[in-house]
Image 1 (cartoon, helix red, strand yellow):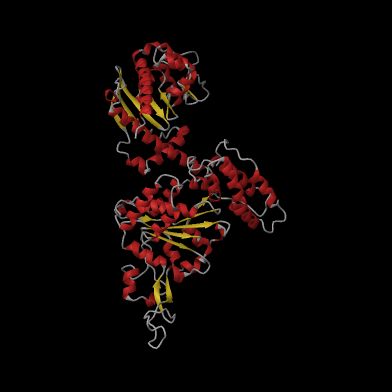
Image 2: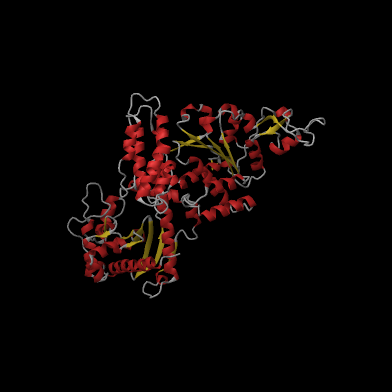
Length: 612
């Protein structure tokens, strides 16, 4: 729903900026360059005094030729992206383009060109160059509204996100963002990624808000939200930090990835898939995040109207989990409902888990009791004397996926490093390779495959394969066994993605200070403790032993400072101290547990800036 007060203020700002543009169009001859004037984008070695000058068309073009990027005038309007520059204020005052009440109130003026706390700036070309539509626009975050005009004044407005400029290396970040947005399904899903209307339809001089203006504002905000989220995720990726949206995207992208094919094979579908392992320190939220991602991906498939998926969709809608943090999610309920869905399967590896459990093998089956047995009243007493070939969890799962090729299936292996990988997967190592999806292999028990078994669990050729529509995701804790301990055959077939303790903050809390009022304190405490753990003072510890956000959840939710201190003491005694004592067992050269306790007990500053 549109915020009417913000919309009214947006209209006021649009009016001011439109008056500026129209005035410049109508009074071109008034603006002459000051001595030493230059453009915002100058040639190498050229002085930049654009903040104090306007230019003529000829001089602007001359600089544009030398700079090869074209001149800009935006820097003369706003300081630090938000506060109007003195020269611009003088311009507004001199030509009566903004009310004197606003101009005379410095505090009010400094906040005037903002909507929802976000600065809105007018970007125009130098001198007559502002007549070029590509050089005259309103900027709101990453989003632009272009002015389209002729000699009579502004004729139309267009909302857009700028296209990347290959020749301008200074815009590499913007280029990367634009390319990323092109792949964003939310951006693609907007009905009008570029919105354009005749200027009169926005009714800036009308008393009421016109539908055209509200539509423009909504489009503006929708694009801004998408662009800001992608920009934030790009920054996280640069810093190696994973938020939930990025983790879900990785799982979604792993499903099917197109590869380059020769022109003569263009009509042939050539696809491959990736298998993922999310690894990191304990308590970083890897398993639950994958569960939640699988749930959302299944629920988002509107073509699936099965009862199990409808129930899952209802749970997610009720918890308002999609696109929000997990504070309102009943994880046990979610897991129970997800396990009932045939498109999802969960297993946890352990030392006793083997090929028989995972793929197929001979396992005990109930048999009829002997007629003379005391248990003869029960005809299916599991005496343990009978064995039969049975499909394992993964074979059964692949059979379901094979019969439902129109939907994606998700198989989660928790603690994937705690099992004997070679023993569990057997010949599946070959099939796990993304390029061999749909290729069949003869399994170890092929000589026992009867027709009924083959029809149910194998492909048309009577062999076992992993269908295209199966996504395999594993999770593991680095301290249980290092990633390096996996043999190369395993590592080559999985993509390993590190979830560090900074990522755990995003996965667990996602910056929600409403549900987690003590989040800033928790972030600072986590940074202090984990920096100490990864430091040189503890030879037996490293970043793999970091404390994930799950250990701090109750502290972050504390409703008061007093409650936070109580939860902090309990968390140390019941969770952190026992864990660190186990980590430091046998540490004779480094500092003691007492030193880490001193770090824990330091005062946490609630007002400190967020540290990831």
